[in-house]
Length: 301
Ligand code: AMP
Image (cartoon, rainbow, N blue to C red; front, side, top):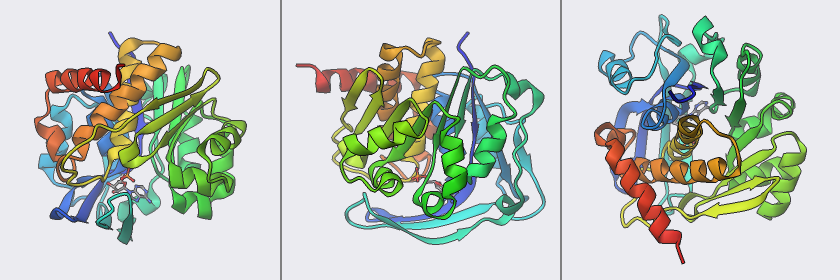
């Protein structure tokens, strides 16, 4: 029996434009990506909100992954919507439209059974809401959070208060610079870890990820892929793979964290191969294991 992972975050209908094409009104959101990725490795519970327009088929898809949806509440109104366009350099994207809709009034509540989750991930939402979830937990072994430029610039106080309470932060390199004023990632990591989280993952898109802990730094490349179709949600799938791996190994020691970062890279590498969550809809556990081995071969010397 693995530990269970609880995630709070957004469930969205995204419209995405990349150099490979367009995908309107597809399932997205930070919690959806995280939960589906983690579900390949461990039991997952999800706390989020949808509107009455949320397709029943997408809820069924999440349930088909074994995700516990007691915390996915549906309220009258429209689901959160995000529209984004990627540049030819897919590390760069513009948010063209963002409609909070039912998310504007969202106050996440953990169902009683979720309060004893061993692992908690606070996917990207307003940092005050992330803190409110953290305060509902009992006996949580490990909590991690993600954030974005929007909150670093617009809600810094709430973000700093959250950082003091989580054990891991997962952000991308430009966000690490924005948060600390440091362009150098080693300097940025030192500054962020001084704010609270003992572990820090800095995601560097196609260049991979760095894990900073008291044991030092661990680096994992991204899998070199010939075709990246849609990078949306790669960071959330990374975190899902990472927390799923920690839950499966029931350990938080140094080797478990390193292995988890590799599983994060594995799930992220699948996510970018098609629009939205499409690649993960047909993925098997054997595919995940196979690619974990590919990462081992990629880095062995
Ligand atoms: P990522 O590519 O990891 O940044 O995640 C993209 C997902 O985050 C998309 O599916 C969006 O629906 C979702 N998203 C975008 N902006 C926000 C926001 N302000 N709050 C919560 N989720 C968001």
